[in-house]
Amino acid sequence: MRADRLLSLLLLLQNRGRTTAPELAAELEVSVRTVYRDIDALGASGVPVLADRGPAGGYRLADGYRTRLTGLTDAQAGSLFLAGVPGPAQDLGLGADLAAAQLKLQAALPGRLAGRARQIQERFHLDATAWFRDADPVPHLARIAQAVWDQRVLHAHYRRWRGEVRRELHPLGLVLKGGIWYLVARVGAGAGAGDEDGEETVRTYRVARFLAVDTAEDGFERPAGFELAAYWQESTDRLDAALRRQTAQLRLSPRGRQLLPMQFGAAGTRALADAGPPDADGWVRISLAVESETIAVGDILRLGTEAEVLGPPALRRALAETVTALAGRYA
Image 1: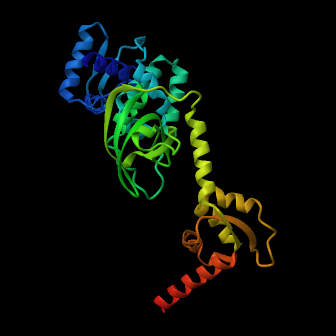
Image 2 (image 1 turned 180 degrees about the vertical axis):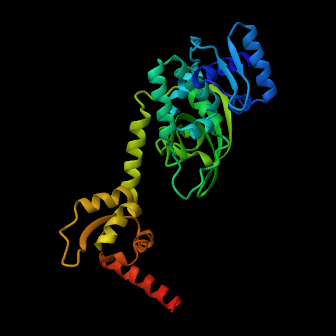
């Protein structure tokens, strides 16, 4: 709406000072001609907008003028929790709301605090996506997020590793983990995905794997006492325990100790914390929680010659066979 745009324009001038028409147009995602019309409209409504000519010119507010029209809308207030992650805010359809909320927040702060806020924004940036991996395409994220907010049932077409399924979901929350969006949702036995005794269950879905979603008119009640953060922590702990069922005994060089946390994350850090004393060559022995034998072989090979598997014997044999096959291939 034009009224919202005029307010954003006014707050931009108040927060940033002298700003050119092209800069304002880029910020507001409109044409320069539209900015000129909006500047005229502000002037006609009594806002003292001054135009400075020349190479260093631009538009600014008269000295001492400040607006107090800084009330946040519901959407803008709700977007503030994503103030440090503009990319995910854009994915959720809250990009414009977040920008408007930040402008209003800056306008409401005293001069010293507003300057401090700008310094923080200029000096710190959070990039939630992991290295060397593009973010998942999430074309249905905004609709899913709206269903989470409105507590509306979702009819979803989802791609699992075992094939495609259709589900009726009660969306309970969204989680951004390592640049990947996940939906936490309840599924009832009536949707074909409940437990064997017919009880409803809460599950986690990767948002990029939704092929289609449709929001129903029906609402639902959230499970009593359900807490998204607590569920997510319990779920990740359970997954980690289920995956890392074996323990490997390794020798690590000094360089291997540096590589282990990068390759094995928290499991590597925990293993190093319990490592024995270094031997005469500086190598240490550790006990490392690993996944299945096949996956463990690939993971340990990433440490190269900086690690030696001491046990269990089956894992040592599997690693030796893999290395022998590689040596033969590259002989």
